[in-house]
Image 1: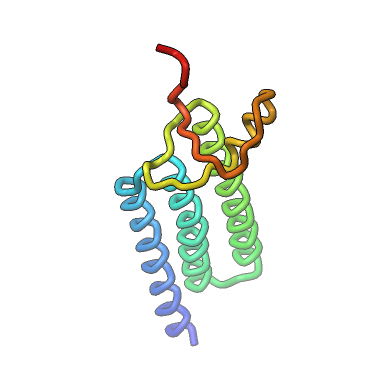
Image 2: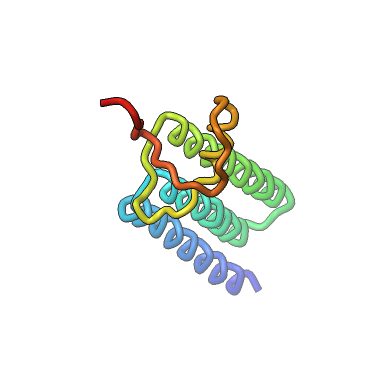
Length: 133
């Protein structure tokens, strides 16, 4: 049984490492900050979870199980919050959207908060100001 757990654990560690490597490729290849942040936060949650569960299968115990569960919960929570904060900060500072982006739902919220007209779904490119020559 322990040999089988070792093989499954090794497979999970390798798959987790591949998921993290794929996130690195996404970081280099995706077109803008928002898709990069999404890819990295999603893949890091899955990749770190797989690696930790794989290591747990190599050294199973109640103490290690508690540590892994806590580590995965903290990782998923902080990755999601961090990715959201980075993307929102980028948006509010004017980092442009990719050219393929069709909808800008946050733009309507930001314009309404600043006292401008509300036009949901309208495409807006942050960083480009109109009316200034």
